[in-house]
Structure formats: structure tokens, C-alpha cells
Length: 77
Image (cartoon, rainbow, N blue to C red; front, side, top):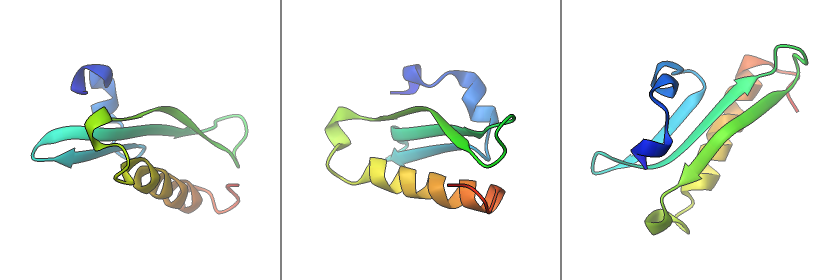
């Protein structure tokens, strides 16, 4: 799945979550806080390796996104 994740996203470490298993990327979620609507965040890109679906990886990444967006802006909804 690494080919799906442009290298630039490796440099956005506060809004880029990567799930790994045995040093292999099995899931990722890239998000940003809106610069025009300061109380909103946006999931830009996400994915879970087909062999690891149904393992709650997507759910865990989404929960981490919600927690992080909330810390970034307590008015986030």
C-alpha cells in the first residue's frame, strides 16, 4: 500500500496516521483542519490493506483522527 501514499504525506506528522504490522503499512488516514472553517476538519485520504480489513484498523484510525481534531480545535464537530 505504500505506493498509494505520496511521499509528501510522510512529512505531515501531526495529521497523518499510519498503521503498520511487521514493518508493512496496513492502513493510513491523512487529514487537515480547514483553514477557512476553523471548527471543521477534513479527511483527505484513507485506506486499509484488503488483507487487514475487518480488523478495526479503519475504526481505530478514525477514532485517532477524531481525538486529534478535537485537541486541535475544541469546537470541532
